[in-house]
Length: 321
Image 1 (cartoon, rainbow, N blue to C red):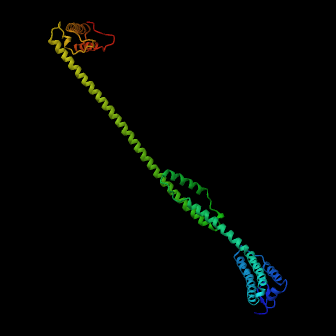
Image 2 (cartoon, rainbow, N blue to C red):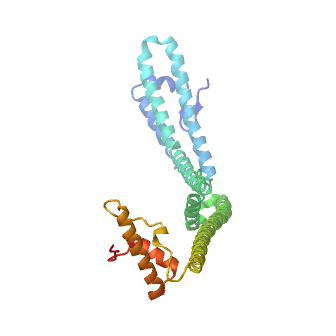
Image 3 (cartoon, rainbow, N blue to C red):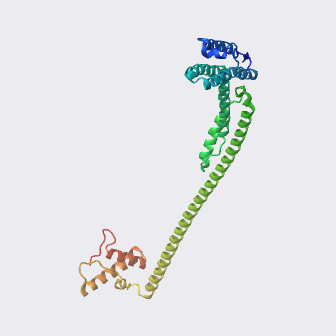
């Protein structure tokens, strides 16, 4: 070891190193000198050259730290009795060096932490822009359309300006791609929803047409049944008229067809006797003749009226025998 070793911050040599551990106050003086020299310069962590200078300046403290640490280790091998004192004094020097290193590197560390936070903020903002265009898990087109439209409103409210700094172009590209994707997917969903609604309307219109056709068919069938019934009644009426005319022509004018031949159901409390039956037939024949010749009612209609009256179907009318 040479007589004088410089660490660029303080001069240390063989004659001084022992005194640091033996002479009272020598270590404290060396620490003060090292601290004064180490902190004589103001470190700048905002520039590349400043950050490099921080590292170089720290290395000067490291050189002094190693020199004293090596001397301490060599001395402790032969001076076991002085180990505690040497370790304590050496630790003081070591700890101060650690403290100085931290202080010297603080501007750089603060800058790097702030820089990392700044970049993280921009990256997260760009990720948010991209996430707004992420596919949705729902299969409901209307719900998907509403969600995509909400995301489009959020994208429209975003502005990519100088606040993104060196990330501006990346943010601009993410915004353009997300916007383009949402425009396409919204148009596709609107078209699909319109097609589905049109198809549903067509089905509804067809169901309505089918319903009206069924109702019209039922109405026609009802009208046909009514017409068929009316025709049958008319045919039956005509047949009865013909039968009545034929009966009238076959019998003398003064001798109308006996009512007894008409199937009349009497609503009597007790079955009539033979005498009552004869009297009833005579009364019905007399009434039938009166309706035909006095009122002008046809034979068939007269017979139906007599049956209705006899069965109690005509209000306020009855046949007295």
